[in-house]
Length: 324
Image 1 (cartoon, rainbow, N blue to C red):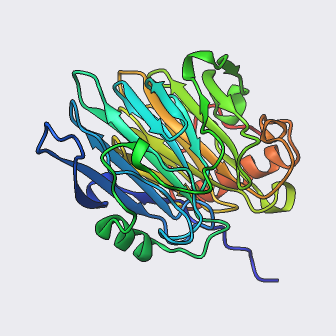
Image 2 (cartoon, one colour; image 1 turned 30 degrees about the vertical axis):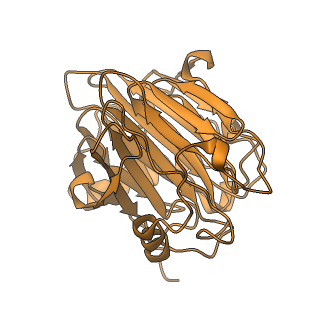
C-alpha cells in the first residue's frame, strides 16, 4: 500500500509580495498609499491577501465589490498599526490596533488615517464563493473600475449592504491556552472569535507568544476536521516555523499557508514577545474550539508521527517529546 504523502506548509515572504501604489483621495495630500498583495494560489479560502500602508491624513480609494466592480467578494480586515477611521454610507467607525472588521459584498467603504503615525491595515479577500481570481483582482485594483467620489454623500448605490461587523480587540476576553509540555506546547494567550457572519472562515485569532514559547506540533487532519486550511500572519518579530519537512525562520509580515493535513509549529526564537494572527478556513459547522487541545481525536498519534518523520529527515527532536 502506497504511503500517504502529507502536504507541505508554504511561506509567502513579505518582500516577494506584489506592491502597487494608489493615489490618496485626501485633497490636501499628494501622497500615494502603498498596498502589498500576496497570492496564495493553492488556497480555496485565502487566495488574495493584502497589506495597506496609510501615512497621516491619507485616505484609501473607495472600495466596493459587486457584479459591476470585480465580483461579489467579502473582505475581512485587521488593523495592524495606528488609529484608523472606517467610513461607509452608513456612518464612521473608529478602529484601533488588532480590531477586526468584516465588510460584506456591496458595502462601499474607505479607510482614513486621522492620526499622527502611519497606519497598517491587513485585508483577507474571501474567494471561496467567488469566481474572481488573483489576476482579475489586481487588474481591478490597478484600474479602479468603480466610480470614485469625493464624499460618500455623493454615492448612488441602490443596494447598500448591512453595516460592517467590528470585533474590537479590547472587548475580546483573552483565553489562556494550555497544552501539555509532552507534546511540545507552551501556555499562551489568544484573542479568539468565531464569526457567524462568515460562511467560510471558522475563526479569527490573535496569538501572543512569549520568548522561547511555542505552539505544539499539530495537524488539522481532514479525516477528523474536514478540509481545514489555516494561515498565520507574523505581525512584529522573527519566528521559526517547524514542520515534519523543514525548520525555517519567517519574518515580520510574512504569511504562512497550511493546506489541509500539513503539520506545523511556531516557535518564538527572539527575546521579544511575538504577535501573529491565525485564520481557519473551513466549510465545517463544527466549532473550531472543539478541535483544540491534545485530547482531540488522533492528536497524540499524529504528534508521534510528526516526530518520527523529523527523525527520519535528521531534524531536531524537541526535548519534551513523548516516549512510547
